Length: 172
Image (cartoon, rainbow, N blue to C red; front, side, top):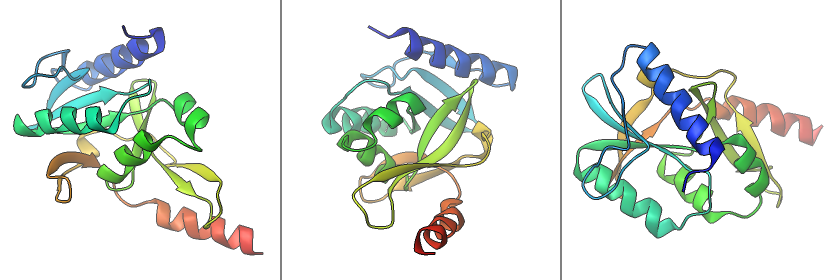
């Protein structure tokens, strides 16, 4: 059963996609799984998964393999409230970030904001580094993760500059 927050995020993204001229569908089957939203983005099928609750790595990979087998790319969206609660210990977030070329996506008013959960300069504490703006679905990068043989969604590497700024602040 979906939580109220999960349903709100899904509906906000769905409405924003319609407003932006896309034709998304809710809970449509791709093979044997139902992504929260499926939408065609410039000829590429996108399966959007809002992940708010604890899940297993096996489930993540199973869902992504089903999407990939149907030619879709998977976009995992994780609410910031969840990232802030689990930033220290949840492997499923680390796996999603690794598969999405180092990025997690946060929902924000129907849009998405790229982010990274990263170690703070080799220390044990982790931090959440967010891109300065939300991004359009059409600006995402659709690629193949060769290591996992999965179709994924990612975004440009913005964090290198912010990471270097943070390193400079910590060192001085």
